[in-house]
Image 1 (cartoon, rainbow, N blue to C red):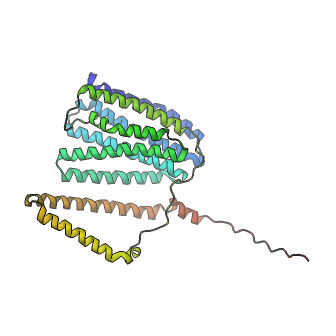
Image 2 (cartoon, rainbow, N blue to C red):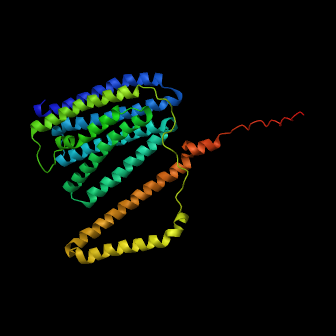
Length: 332
């Protein structure tokens, strides 16, 4: 192995070891948390799946020089692995906060939804921009996902277990993401020296050890309850509620569109109008696709997921009426 690959090898080794140890721990969690506390083991399964996504990503980074694909394609695959890791961590947060009310079918549905939305958004970037520009934007969005997902898991532990251990680690690992991306991705505006790149990767491997240890310490605690920590809303979106302010909404939209039209016709040079027009078309097309995906998933949730809605489930519970006792007569 080349010395320049030692950092990637360190991260891959830590990830593989964490997953192997995690399978043993999963059996213990399954034995200790049953019935209404089953959500703990499901959150841990998401944690393991997220680390498996890391294994695939770091394996790609370690063996990338041997792959017969372009450098930008390798970076896209690395970013996709990082995004997959972030999506699975978000599902882990859902299990931690929603408790026993959150079912695996819901996790599968919402994970698919997040993956589709991200895929459509990234497709819009690569269609609307040059490859290098799109890759840079993809990297920036991946940074946001990588940082936020780790902080979300820490926040879930704070809400469920009243501990800030994972939240602190989430912030530390989140703030380390820019350095990690610079040390991993090769198509950058500047070249990171090999010594700096390897040092950053080895530090990230050490942080992974602390992250895995902190998660294990927290997940082995017994939660005090299995209730849903997210309050279920009973309100629904209705156009009727907008009727009193409809005139204002129309005026506001007209003013904003007029300003946008003036900006295009007066301030924007003529040679830029065609790219702007094409960009608006691309954005509109992908916005339509995203709205279609949202509509399909909303319909599926209403059609097939009604029984998983806590408010609807509660309404179906038959409550036995209390026995009416006759009032006692007061004896004189």
